[in-house]
Length: 417
Image (cartoon, rainbow, N blue to C red):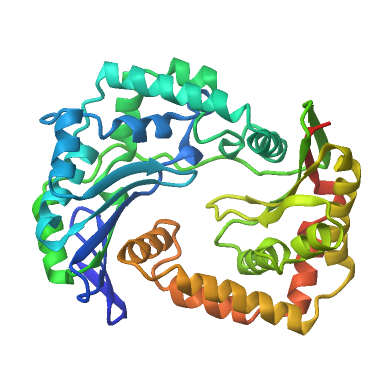
């Protein structure tokens, strides 16, 4: 068993069966929050024909085990006033839990039962498939989701990121219990788990409980196939969905680096400058000065594989063309005009301030340290990231804009008139 200390309040260790355990001790509150991440899971690992399988798995995994029914699981959680939930993302699967210290062992044991021994009831699977299909149809009625789906397909094509986490009507309809069981057996192994705990618990107690509950779970003997998704290239294109609405959604996006790339923090800072808050450039220029947008922003998701850098606006349908031109011109300005030192420093302060504010509760601590470990950066990245942001220069911003935000890779998605 190896352990490494990052700070006096956070420790990491690896158990004999491969489980990574992270403990953030916080004795000031009688609450323990936990996150159990399963890496090598999530939509990035889905075959095109099974898009949405991890979302369906997250929906049904807590709806019955070898010993407990869906109702009994819910009653156990509610009887002690705890919280227990499952979810999936593009890059990982996650189980979230929160309880008072006294009841933590019970809720951890229940989480283990759900993760290791789901029953995959046919009736529960069919019910969750119906709900998922309704959600897919609902998203098609929302202009923002339509525009983003169209943009995502242009940027990623048949890459797993090109599909919604929900999957498609066809893939979800065709998923069977045997598919879920096979997926679960392949991906849910102890050496894929990262258990991140924060609260009134120390490392020794954490190791004791995790080994007691998970210790008999042996590493998988199934050979793990390396992820092979090929090279991504994005070419300039534009697509429009005509809708007779009073509003239009305009999105412009580019293929952008993954989290482990050296340019990742610079693009995060650029996103903050462009679209974060009432003082951001897009808000000031397109809404406050010109009155073109009722909603305008930018985002750059953190991804294991190539991400996307996106700017968007919602505008009145009669302003679609001028809004599109205005959005593009703000991107063009980034390539042609260097930010001032003051603009850069304000953006740094904003981003670092929000980063610090995102680490106040036990749940937030368990999330961010477990997340960094799951993405392969390690718990040390919590200290590295702010320093990388501090070191960004105005020259870095312009270099990044000229490298990634070029016209020959610009994808434009419009929903409206």
